[in-house]
Length: 177
Image (cartoon, rainbow, N blue to C red; front, side, top):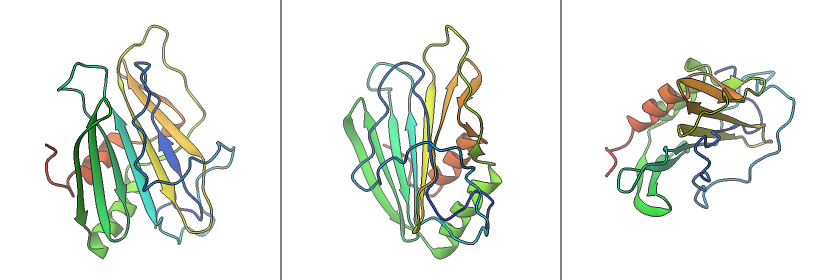
């Protein structure tokens, strides 16, 4: 398993650089854990998360072009909810095989998702997009990590290629409407 896996839940989120509120998670999620100083690395690296959640907040653009989404992944299925400023656009669930789920778990490490000291955006950076990721384990939860993408820079508490991870999840789903 990956070094990012541990008996807890890693939550990675994105701060919305444009000042809008992040898309709320559907009821399938768990409460956001408090931020702690613990690294998200497990001592034994043996437990896979039972729930993986990813949020994407689009830049502030007029409807109908604005799209934000929430993706949840369990060993049995992957679900994507797409909205435009709170208006539901689509809600789709697709079954997953054990091999597909193992691939999602392996992608967490392959994309280097990990906690980093908080970084702040450059002054004057407006607009941008953001991501949030939450991993829930059976035993406990780990800190919520966040990243904002603005002006060609990524800032926040999440390091790694969250866009690449999001692309791997998207490949498991039908094209969004």
